[in-house]
Image (tube, rainbow, N blue to C red; front, side):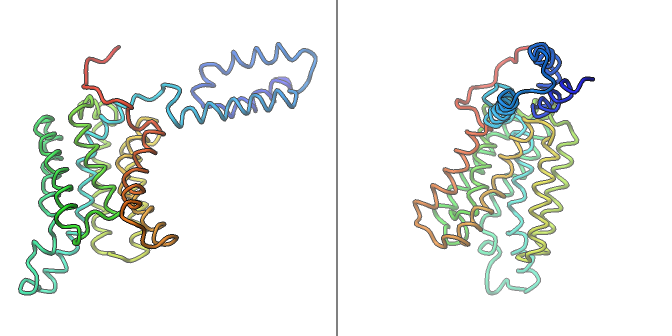
Length: 306
């Protein structure tokens, strides 16, 4: 291998792997043949190649290259979303554990201690229905659970809902219900992530729940819980898949809004209600649309092209 070819290969290594596998040798032949008697690329040629590689990576970030089908993203969400949402019951389970340990029945009924319990029960039902292949029934219960989120926000905001940190659960629930209704569905999702994805996410939810209950508000436990959720969700969706990574972003919206909430209180403190809604409900949707995690228009699932 000549020095010129080696230098060109080093520049081409900045391109995405699959692009190099399809076009790398052809690009190399063109570059070497156009170099004439030179023994190294010119500065302008090197900058052009590097800038083209950066642009290609950026196009892939926003799915502008057409390499990601958002319907497949939602299919994974339809399969794994109900399981991922069960993590949201962690705080309530901790409160019930405290209620039992403190023998606080006389002071406070369990329904006041865990007012959102019916919503998480509904999501548990949705998860079971999805795993049993009952998509339409699962979609009905998913919309019912999403409506439960809204009712909690309207009628029980003082308990804990309608604050920034909870926006991720509301958005993930809404997107899961929409995915069950309009995406290719859990069957397609299972084809993309396999049964292993379901098992990995289920284990992730259990481990994160245990950490959340036993290490409630303990910084180290909360940090470990966050790491488990992020790593487990990426592993379940497929960290090596662009479709899987975008599905994981939707399932990790609660973690995203938790980080946003921490940043808000650290930097800004209390913010007006309208600003809170814009930041915690509007901003995540804008990011998902920008990253290609959501289709610009949701269409009912039809036959897939070969």
